[in-house]
Image 1 (cartoon, rainbow, N blue to C red):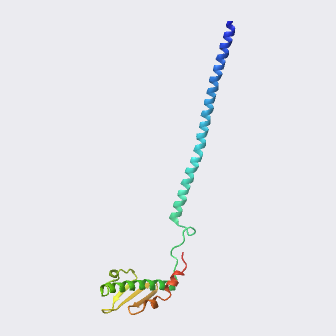
Image 2 (cartoon, rainbow, N blue to C red):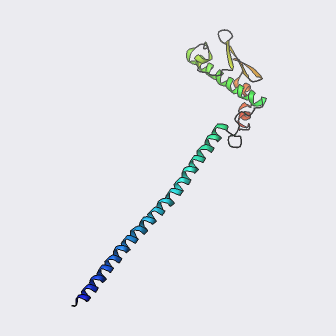
Image 3 (cartoon, rainbow, N blue to C red):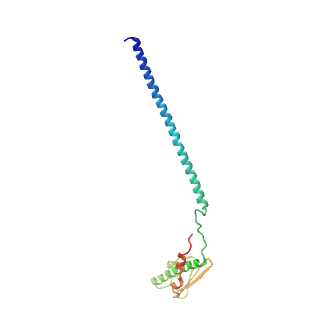
Length: 169
């Protein structure tokens, strides 16, 4: 083979090798550019997500702090006098049942509502003799008295119906 053919082949191989190297370098550069674009594109939704979470946290905090009526229903709706009286009658009847249960178990009246297991800060308990008592209760402007000789069903009346039919907030 003549040297010019060998040189031409070497030159062609060198050119082909150079083209392959250049092609690989171009591919690597294209991959780097694509990866950089992917990272940039991935950061944008992450930034939007962080901003949305931050905004949601601020709105939630403001809502919880200010408690607007259009989200949180007002809890202190004034009850009617009838409902207050019915609630008081039920509380007093409950206290009377505790007292009677105590009397049945111990054979005597309790010294206080608390010792009978009853509660109700607005109810006062007074012992009238050895076998009778009186409960006096208040609920706002409503004041009632229940004596131990009064039958509970008559005292309660339709209180349960009134309380359950009231408007809830």
